[in-house]
Length: 189
Image 1 (cartoon, rainbow, N blue to C red):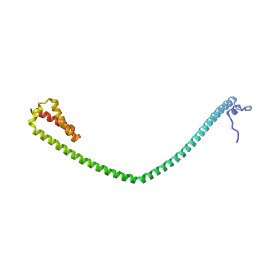
Image 2: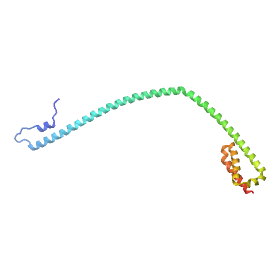
Image 3: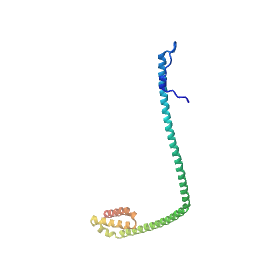
Image 4: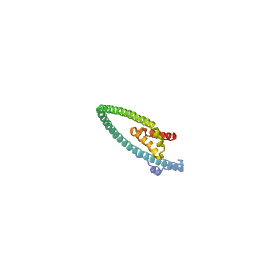
């Protein structure tokens, strides 16, 4: 392969002078421009070669990364398959246990519902009995109304406490009912 001409070779080249030849200044200017363009082209070529080498190195790194990722993906797939197989193996047992527990919860819920109904029935019966007792004890109402306000309130609180012992979710309702009964009793004086 022939040796390449460098910009310095172009600048140092001297032509022999002949009669009726080219204009010397034009030739010198042209040679100067050729040398400048050649230098720029060689610089650009070197820069491009460096970029290509860098990209080839980067491509090699990406290929290595791709291989590593492919290996990791295969390992993850294998682990997932093994996990899936183990889960499938034990899923029937887990499902049976879940059905058994669900049945137990259902039985317990039915038991709680029945207990709740029984408690509500008992509380209502006690409230009816207390109301009937209050109605029978009407002559004593005057004595209750003559008590100071604090004692009258404590009676309604006692009624509320009795109600809340039987059914906690009736506490608010029972207190307001007892208070309204107390107010009604006072208004009846």
